[in-house]
Length: 174
Picture (cartoon, helix red, strand yellow):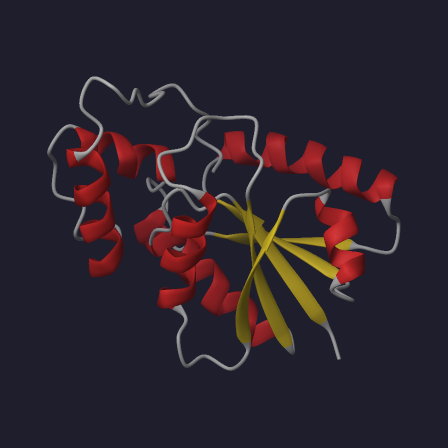
């Protein structure tokens, strides 16, 4: 049985992530969507909220599960008995970042393979950063995220105000 991990911060999850996960689930016996909770960037949602938003996207899909983690991805793969890390590539600049990460992960654990899936054309512009920025500026994100994620974004953004600053300059690689 081949088990794969699709790691990310998913802040928030969007249709590009969902597309990669569904396509990866056709390639492997089991796919674990791993929600990372200690990234080196500022996030809009708490780890618990991100986990819940991701989990709700895949309810009823027996091949996909959602698990939170806070250690090295390759160590998490070992803990989960996974052999593969799945990543998505949108644009050329993603390749350089993902290539370096794949080489680093291979150095850390030679038994874990990295598979990169090219995003579907309609999702090439999507990133969590783009979704957050559009939502913060009052734009319509209904074609970018599921309804429950759009509702969570609206709720969180209404609570930002002056007391809670959101970093608009995070990486476009989430």
